[in-house]
Image (cartoon, rainbow, N blue to C red):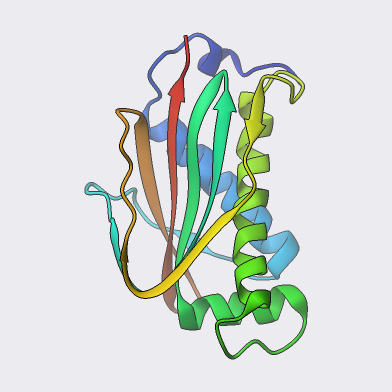
Amino acid sequence: MSLNSDISDSIKFTEELLAGYIIVATREVFTTMIMMDPKDEFPMREPVSRFKCSITGMVGFAGTYSGVISIHCPVDLAMKITSSMLGMECDEVNDDLNDAIGEIANMLGGSVKQVLSKGGLDVKLSIPTVIAGEDYTVNSLSDSDCVVIPFVVEGQKFLVGLTLKKDI
C-alpha cells in the first residue's frame, strides 16, 4: 500500500481529510469488533480537554507523521462497549475495561496508520495509554492539525480525536 497522494503532497491536513480518517476507522472498528454501529456528528469546533466520569484511550504516531489518536468515553458507555467486545458483562472500571479501550485506540491507530504509511515502515505506533477518572484534563502541547468527531452509539456520545503533524 502506498502513501495516499493527497497526504504525501500536503504539509497541513484539512479538517475534512482528518475527519474522514476518523469516521472510516471508527465505523470499521465498531462494526467489526464491537458489533455496534456508531453515527458520526459534525466535527467539533472547539476541542474538549476536560472529562468527567470518563475513560480515554490514546495511541501515539511517530515517524513521517507524529501525533495521537484518542477515544474518550463516559465510563457507563465504555462498560457497554467492553461487554459487547468481550462477550461478557463488564460493570466496573477494571483491567478488562482498560484493556478494551486501549485496544480500541490501538485498532483506530492501526487503521489511520495504514492510510498514512508506506507499507507500514515509516510510521510507528506507541503502545496504548489509558486514563480513567472522575475529573481529568487531556491537553495537546503541539501545533499539529487536530479534529475531534463526536459519535453516538446506543444513545450515548463518545469522542474520537486525531492530532497529526507531517515531519518534514
